[in-house]
Amino acid sequence: MNRETIRHHMISEEGLKLTPYYCTAQKLTIGVGHNLDSRGISEGIAMAILDEDIDMCLSELSEHFPHWLEYPEPVQVTLIDLCFNLGITRLLKFKKTIEYINEGLATGNYTKAATELMDSAYARQLPNRAKRNHDRLFNA
Image (tube, rainbow, N blue to C red):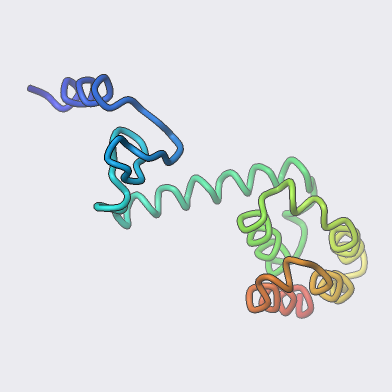
């Protein structure tokens, strides 16, 4: 029996679900019956998921911030981190921060964006991460 035959058999028996669910044994499961509670995932799978998530962030940033690759690298890293952590929809709600980032592209100064970022629920919920993003913007 070849792997493709086994794969088709397992999908027909288990189904394919791309979001986590609880199986009949009440174990958190994903994919084709992969028991996350007992088995977790491998580092290779975690890195593949990370790469896919990064690619999604890069695509979304390119769509919503047409000149984002012109920003200094620390600003790019901050935008990627915010997009990854918050999602593009929530990131786009940081209107003042985005306004100041765009202003910084013309002036070379991102300190107003850094200060504005810290005046948010995000900064109160994740103070250490927010501070790192603040510092990157402040020193860009």
